[in-house]
Image (cartoon, rainbow, N blue to C red; front, side, top):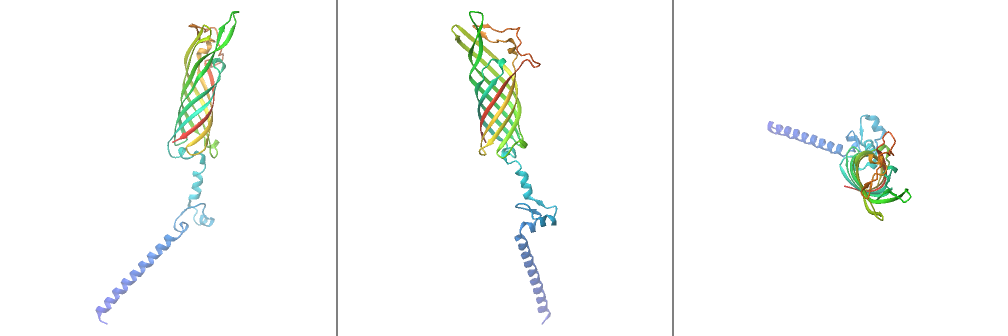
Length: 281
């Protein structure tokens, strides 16, 4: 065999060896990629890792364990975890007025708009209306006594509040909220012929603050129902005068009367119980 033939044979043999080595490497790579994640990676997917895997690599990150953190409070659903949501709530309930306000307890209708942001916070803007309210008035009688009647009117209030979600007091599907806020109350009473020939009139505005608790049950991701309890404290200094309305244009106030005889003697309380129906976006 000549030198040329011998050199050519050596070159061909070297190329064949390189090609065979590449084929083996490619086959080894395919085999490794085909192996389960436990053999190819330090991440274990799909539940808890086997004990032998934990012992072999104590620093292994187990995604199954991380999933437990995500599901710790499943009732919070996506609006408390990652995204802003808008909640529109139609509510109805009872307003119970303290005695010094002389207003009958009554049925109330309301509407609330919530902006719920990540971090378990809700900014609440809501209003309540009683268009059929009744205010007690005292009419003089022939024997110098007083008899009670009621004057028709409207009460409405408008509030801005902050709600905080409490996961520790919540269970699956049932969320507990609490918070506080402030608002304005408007009283407008006017009725002619409360009895024959007696007309009544009274208007007033009051500043108030409130605290509340609320339980919401998730029917579906966008439909919730709930119960609420809210306590309002109103700055109602006019109640010190006893009868604070006008009859036939004449004030019935008695400036010698002070019916609120406490440390915070100008405060009056309204207790609110509500049934809430919410849609979330």
